[in-house]
View 1 (tube, helix red, strand yellow):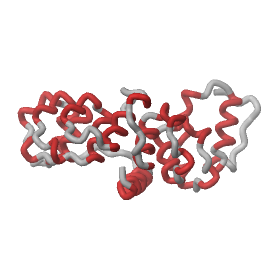
View 2 (spheres, rainbow, N blue to C red):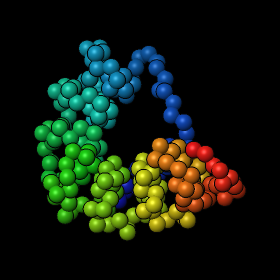
View 3 (cartoon, rainbow, N blue to C red):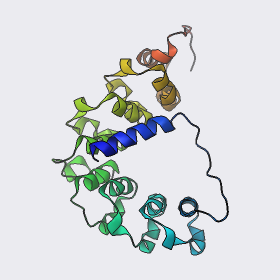
View 4 (spheres, helix red, strand yellow):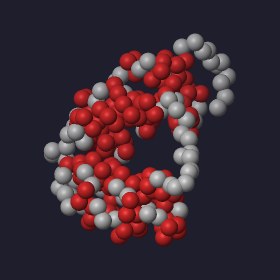
Length: 222
C-alpha cells in the first residue's frame, strides 16, 4: 500500500463513519455495481448477471464473498496490488490466480487474512502502509509489527475503529477530538469484553474525552 493509497483509505473511512450505512437503492436497469452486490449475496442469480460489464471493482465485491465464482473472472491481470491486498485478506485461497505473488502488498494481504503466521510470510520489504493493513485486519500481529511507533493519529483512529481491543496500546488518545470519539463509538465495540465495574472505569478513563461531563455511581452495574 503506497502512501497515497493509505491517505485516501484513511480519509474515506473516517468520513464514512459519520453516516449510517444505507441499503443501495435498486432501479432498472441495474448497474454493474448493483449486480455485484446482489451476486455477492445471492450467487444463485448468476445466470441473469451481466458479468461482461464488470470491471475489477465489481469482481472485488463479488469475490470477497463468493470465491467459487472466480472461474468466471477474466480480468486477473488487471487487478492492482492494492486490490489483491484487499481480496486476499478475505479470500487467501485465490492466491493461485495472482500473477504477482511476490509483491509486498500481496503478501501483506495474506498475512492480514489470519491464515498464515508471520513466520510464513516474508515481510522485509513491507511499507508502513502494508504493516498498517496487516495490523488493522489481523490485530494479533501487533507485536510483530516493526514500525508501530510510526503509526500516525489517523492510522490509530482507523485501527481502533476496526480493532477496539488495541485501545490500551494507542499512544495518541489525547490527540483525538470529540468528533473523533463520536465517530469511533468505541464503547459498544468493547462492551462484550467488559466483565466488571473496575474494567468499565478503566475504559472510561482511557476514553475520557467523550465522557468528561459524566459521573458514575460506585454501585455501577454491568
